[in-house]
Length: 178
Image: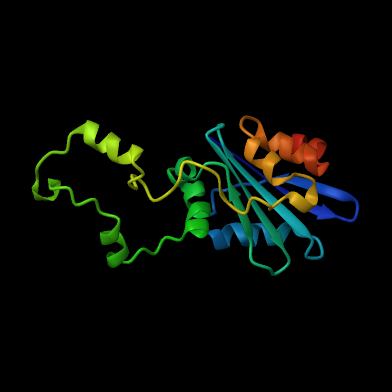
């Protein structure tokens, strides 16, 4: 289950609206949705949260490139909307040469089963089990000029969106759309 909301900054403060993600299939769709909510090309913040598994923040300002932060890249990459964000942050166009470089050619490529213990040892030794880290990814300073420092953002866990909205002075308007 997802929760998504838009916060658009205006002269009078923040205006909130809940966001229907049904028609969002790409990052461009999400950016267009945010820009439609913008007043005079002011800042728009898009919050996406999936049941305390991860949250993402997308910041749009006028025609500038979007800024994106995701609390847990690996968890987000396993969900449809999170994948949109993590692909933008980490890229998604590995060519075959890059893919070959990340293979662990340990003798099992000939069909020999790999012990599960060996797989766990490889992960502990730093071998890439997954291309997406199970850690925050993206622009950690995305909200620094709006009242939430990098360290505060990275410390967030449950109910992150409420804490972000509180730091931005938009808690009441966000609560109206929850």
